[in-house]
Amino acid sequence: MLMALLLDAANIIGGLLLAIPLLGRFPVIARLTARIAPWRWLVGIVALVAGGYFLIVHLISGPHLFHFEVVGIAVGVILAWERLTGRRPLVPVPAATASGAASAGAGSPEPAAAPAPSPAELAGPALLVAVFGIIAIVVGLQGLFTPN
Image (cartoon, rainbow, N blue to C red; front, side, top):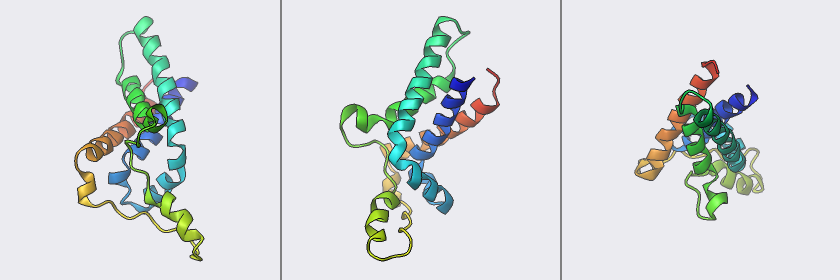
């Protein structure tokens, strides 16, 4: 029960982090993702562990492989990519985390909001990862309402 909740939460939160280029245009989501963006690697590790656990359980004793664990493993790999490989992250980091610290020291009362991504940023791999993030959110919400 707890592992299923962890997998669903990791899919939802990881999906929000992956869908930053699309959903970051909404101020509420931009502020939320800016706060949790430094912890994206930890969300990725939780998604990898929970997805891997259910993958093993369902391959050994379960009825069949479910899409919840496949999406969880993919979310985990994408979010933890920078920590696993040492290369640049596959997920764009919200600008509020980078510019917020610089502008807060400049005397402004609150950190700068993340600018909306330009249409050029929503092409190729960034668009693919963002759409997969929305799919992960839907899968995580579906997992909350699906009995185990």
